[in-house]
Amino acid sequence: MLERAHASLRAVGVEATLIQAPMQEFTVPSLVKLAIIPLDTFGHLLEQSDQLLALTAAQATLEIGGILAIDVSNGNNRGEIREELVHHLTAESGDGETLITKWVNRCPDPANQVDELIYWYDATGPDGTVQRTTVQFSLRYYTRFELTLLLERAGFEIEALYGSY
Image (cartoon, rainbow, N blue to C red):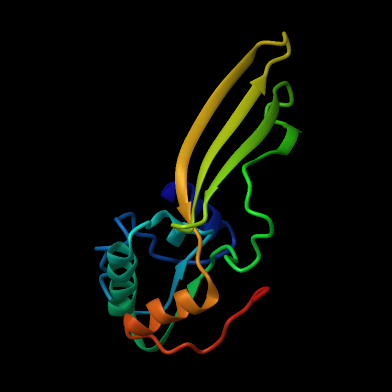
């Protein structure tokens, strides 16, 4: 995955250091101006101790005045809490012969602010044969004030919040 990301960055003329390590213990060779925790990655840290370790590690990587950007789902915008099965996608794959269908089952645990997720990816070949890949994981969601307190506890100053809070 990192090599694909490097290739994409090079294709647009961007040089970047990409690091593969647990969020709770990563380090960088030199301080950076910007650290990004993208695409709900922070939600994979289910325990507060791991969340604080990750934020402390991020804080240690930043130059003075550096910025941490975190992209998380909005825990305030949950609507009715219920189990749901959603059809996310049906599209042709890159080979033009296989049809990919993605289904997602979300089973919320509101007391722990965790969604238990199951993703099903069905690849239907030209002969009608279906190959299914199943992915299961837990994803923690946060409220604005909870995340603000975690960041402040890790030594961050909140500069701005963006999104539908």
